[in-house]
Image (cartoon, rainbow, N blue to C red; front, side, top):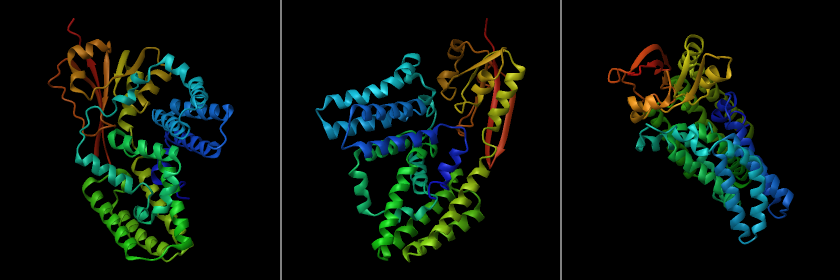
Length: 393
């Protein structure tokens, strides 16, 4: 239930993205490791390596998963070289053909954070997003110390969880999307904690104080940050706030069904709000890419990392036009010399992935406007501009 209605997980489940399949592969790898950790064989290590390999092909974070499993094997088995060889063979069988075809360091993924400011506000957004990741903000007030032993006693889980959370902190370009991979693990921690609470939990002031502090921090953060995934509608935010206070009371008093039903209502409303809020996401870049595919000829460079431009310019039957990714958020990449070296005839530049990005065409006379697509979506201004590159020769 907590996973099914989780706002973050549910939203990315209905998008054509690789995050949810990666999360499932990560869960499968973690499960197999846990099941086989005391009885490894060539076959089992090879299968584990294959799962890790497929996770690498699915998402760039697969390298973190594969590395976490390897590090856990190393800590637990030290000098047993054959274990690493068997596991490594499984990974290489899947990954090596792709590595030979394309270097991972040429991935567009590595350029996503370019042009973004990293400051205290980013850390604040990270903390607020993490606290709200369950769709039930006071959840962390019920996390019990003895449940953390499950994490620390399973190195493959703790290493992967730690590295993923660090990646999200250091890679602000994809908050809260990157949380999808760790949502199932965080929900497992909460579920185990609630089970312990139903068994022997005792009411105390600390839980109420912690829950109240978390809710106030959430409300204050949303007042200033206005994060789209943390509910923007003021009326709904107020309703969810009251319901979460009620759920804290139900859980503390061990009212199981009232807790379950209330949590389902909270997360359903939260998820519905997120889905409705994002129904027009990428509309500007979609319309720009569609226009380019029907009206332009030549090579088009785009800074869109959602694969929408790639679909319209390369996947569809468009023999007169083709596209490729180019990072235009860095000013040095917008100089005449840099643009000339790309060989592109047009550039499709959007702020769909970073609303703080600005594009000054007046200072770049070699970029001639062709078509602008701009929209106000939930108070945020999104644009996609198609410009023609005028060569001096």
